[in-house]
Length: 232
Image 1 (cartoon, helix red, strand yellow):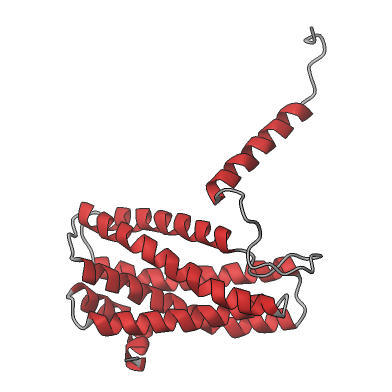
Image 2 (image 1 turned 60 degrees about the horizontal axis):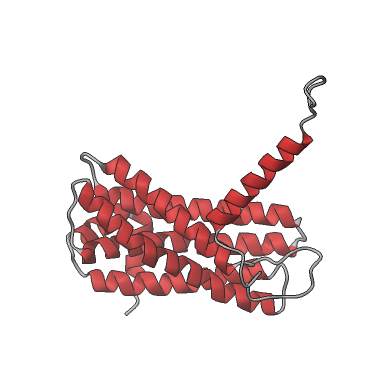
């Protein structure tokens, strides 16, 4: 059911696991092990993040972190399937999904390794902004580790870089939107009320970014002094 040896190979020999996925060999075992690893690691990391606020925020963050990560993988995997097919790798669904899950398992293992560091940092009373930076660094390192499995799986050939580049863009957009919808994870300084979600309605991440850019542009326009002699 759960293969510890597979996790060791994902960490130490990602090329071999990627080849196993690509050849459609025992991919069901890879999927089971990856899903369990993702759920456990993301729950632990989410609980560590929520420990900054404490109390019920620990449970909220522990619940939302695996939902966000697994949801992102579920939505991004079809994009990887399509991109791989467009750029010369018309694989079946099973190898593609197992490859994405193997990458997710490697991501989860690195995230789990970073969990004690984050928890200790919070318990030492580190500043709120520094904790956000450390959590982001942990996510980035885990993401790079997971990406290596996809790199090994695609091997060489034409379209490899374009496939990876476009998939990373899609994955980041989906992941950012999921994280935006499910926040908060840490909580907000000065606010004692703990909420499962920040607000009921406020649009998506892209909408908020566009609104922020528009607001900044309006502020820049209104704050620019008029040139003497041009007023009419």
